[in-house]
Image 1 (cartoon, chains in turn purple, orange):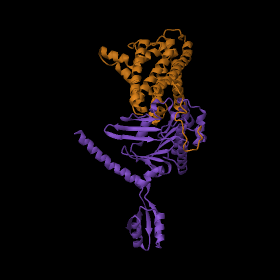
Image 2 (image 1 turned 90 degrees about the horizontal axis):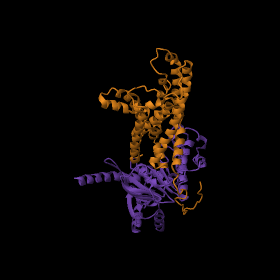
Image 3 (image 1 turned 30 degrees about the vertical axis):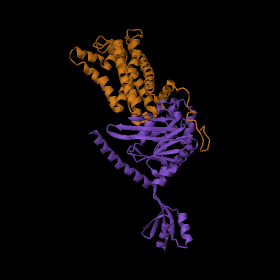
Image 4 (image 1 turned 180 degrees about the vertical axis):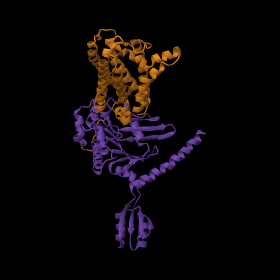
Length: 309
Length: 276
């Protein structure tokens, strides 16, 4: 479990992470979502004790990362794919990491096989494609068989097959009871992978809820109805307590699901030409949510300026 | 994978893998050792160090032996027997710099500090790996240069014995001075984090600024010159001092060692506080 509490990081006047608090629970995939520059990577670096918070604290399994006797056995992290020396082979990279935390060397070949890099284990990583680099990064994260896995933008540079592999792997790790924390700037990716969602924009938490709640709250859905007896149908559904909006020759119905609409209309012997559940895309919902944070942040800044006077 | 359970309600002990005691400094040292030797630049630099150090010494002795043995000679053979080491010192500086700056150049420093959050241990391990490598390489190179160069000097009857004044000291002194230079470069590397910048700073400080400092006026200038790292540290590595104004070998090396130590302590303090 990762607990983030009141975490703040300032670079001079710029606030990268602003009083952020959330919990990443065990046994599920928590998506950490935000546009580029929202503070995701900065937060993850502070989780790993790489960057010093300006204020607040982070604990992993109840203690600070740096207090762990063998951090790679407790937390596995994919940082940036570039955290490698191009002149070193994949196996040697894993070997020194294993040595630093007394992880048996046999584990090196295990993880190489797990990520499908056993054939290029001896190749210098400078020759790796972006996708191979990401796979090696994931091998690094899994090296210590850690109960907490932190992946920063793991699907960057992966082909569709690789993306699906990461998705399945993340789900499997969570099923095994591990804490999985994945950052992404792609809502569509998170929708398929995460159970829980923490949305960050301009360094502030915008949403911290289950994926289902997020969809219910932010992705508006309605039932699209087309009928030759539009007026009668509209009256009928309003009578049943639905919210009906006529749009062109359609009716947009909220408050009743498609089955209920169909049954009500059928009971009255009216005709339907179309009955469709329409969801606005999660990507749209995410954009709306994060664009709002821009305004919020601008307002907050004016407040601070006032306070300084 | 040791965990095979499939149920969603599995309770995984978050510390099931974690040993009760820290892996300890020896693990950090081993990791740094693997890291150091698993890039080609290390082997190349070490080979260059030997070739330049021993090869150039042999060459200069071979070409100058006859002149040195003649009555026109105004130099001591002792000034020639470690000649190549001056060039080998450049590769020691390159190695010392790369040990630190290559991690910053590639972003690997984050992987290093995520694996070993105790930054002091990382720094100490790097310093120890450099010390071991450079002391051995420097000393071995100095001996190789001595034996090869002395072969030509002996032929002219002006050979030096290891028991001659300062000869044996300069052999081990070469290893010591090279270690010091490597650590100095690593210290500068920690502070500036950039290969080219660190390299040019150290090379300029040791090989250029040191000589120019002797032009400074007054007693003050004289002491600045004597205490410049290259001027203070190098006398221990040569049997006969090149510069009569320099400090005596061990006094100079003590001053040089103190300078390197101060730099490393400053580097350590900055490293502790800095974001990776």
